[in-house]
Length: 383
Image (cartoon, helix red, strand yellow):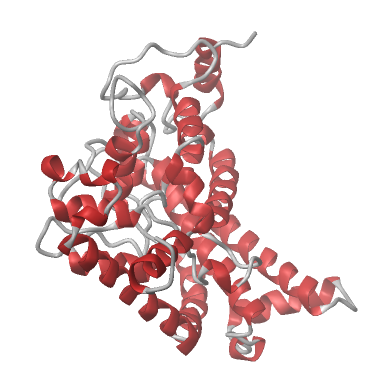
């Protein structure tokens, strides 16, 4: 039997000196006995997978609301894809794959129903009452809202995974709730998840946009990185159907970006003289990053996604409708908290009405929020 201690010794031998080792963890807020044959980060990963918030990701919006079709990505499938890309990068860089996977699996636990439209709606409603953003709420989920243990609230995750949740940072993840943080260095494992998230949502949103018909390949013609993928496809296949061809091109783009991140990050680690985890303390610049050339190549595709997909009138309609649903639900619950489930309403004295309603609504799936709306606003719907 390979014990936890033996796994920790293997990490010391096999991982890079700047990787975060399980034995070095800052620990958990609530003391627990270490497991016989699972490392600290392996336990974190398991706790996240078995959480209620993780299961709910299956019915939370990525770009397309769940009922639009079962082909499109949800928060759950996106999360799994981020975890896969993260582990691939971490493995090549010699980082801690278990820590990377735990952070990746938890990085979207704080997301609301209806994607960023839902987050914007709750942020507006909570503007004068403590604010709302999905990173901070994700930490709240794993620290407080998950109720699985008798001795403490939350999942009691390690400091490093908690730091990865609150410091998750991409162009879509701008914190609104002040300086709330988990102390410690900006680990390379955290940075790997950040950039893997960018790679995943850019390329898979592109895939979903083309599949839906909201984007067309002619929109992408002339963009160097897309033309490069098309040229590669033409060299490898003389006759391929459109769906398989699109898959191969998305695959090419992901591989191109992952390879660039690996090469550029190794160069940066050497140039900055990163020898161990202590060298990361106090650094605010990203070390795990794209090279300048590829960053420039990515920009036009990201602009197309922003202007043609995220601002497409059908996506805007879905987003605006979702925001109205949530604001109306919040108002009804606030004006008449007796309509909240008793287990939710009983927390108002301790946490305040705004925060309890916000927590409840942020945890809803798309379809549960729609069902609640029907029950509260449609006169012939059963309640």
